[in-house]
Length: 296
Image (cartoon, rainbow, N blue to C red; front, side):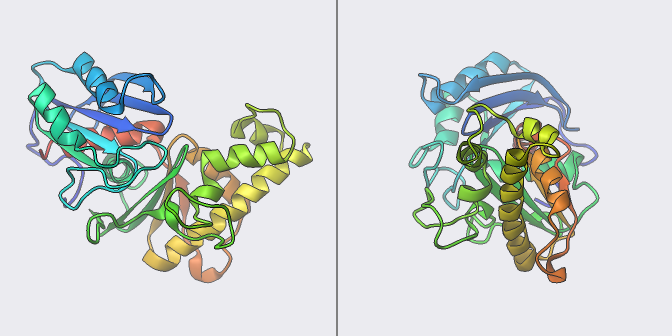
């Protein structure tokens, strides 16, 4: 991939972008300019298996205009991008989802990490469209990550950019990856729910409600400050490693995370870097998956 934005003379028609998350699976038709239509969403904990959920959504959108499908999944893939290698909040380890879906719908299918898909979209039509070197965290049930160097996704052996597994505190809680104290266990939506419970706040309290009440509610301020401090450690480590022009926070809690960080300065001037919320929000993964599918 060079510049992920759709080039002049890009193929016509449409693709279907699918974003498999820890809470929901989302899908929509995507045009070469990134325009989205027909957005569908189902809960990941439906009685159906993930491949069946994905196929069901794709079939609801599929028509003669659709030339390919892109699917973003959490976790690591093999080097060829065919099979999921690791489980997490969504257990797809060992599943060759792309091949399985392609055989069922008779269309090419591109499979990639969900955060990679989101960064493709933000580079093309979102918050990073004027940046060259970008670090992106996607903030939801867990934490995804992706890095672009000179507007190209940084992949290493295939799975570089696992920013949810930067160590924040090696003495911290166990992570699904098998280590302890990863950023995911401190800054994800799951972690925030834990902070809310620790503060004695009612179950179902949202980060948005905490932001509204923080100035006069000490418990809300405590939760947000705890979250912001953990974010600061994670972002400073990413900046130290990649020296980006921009850090983008996406996913369902990206805007809230960027907001709390306004009051949390870098731990050292060495790690000063602009941090912004993703423009495309929850749609980034779907749009990026659809844009990637044009190269199938």
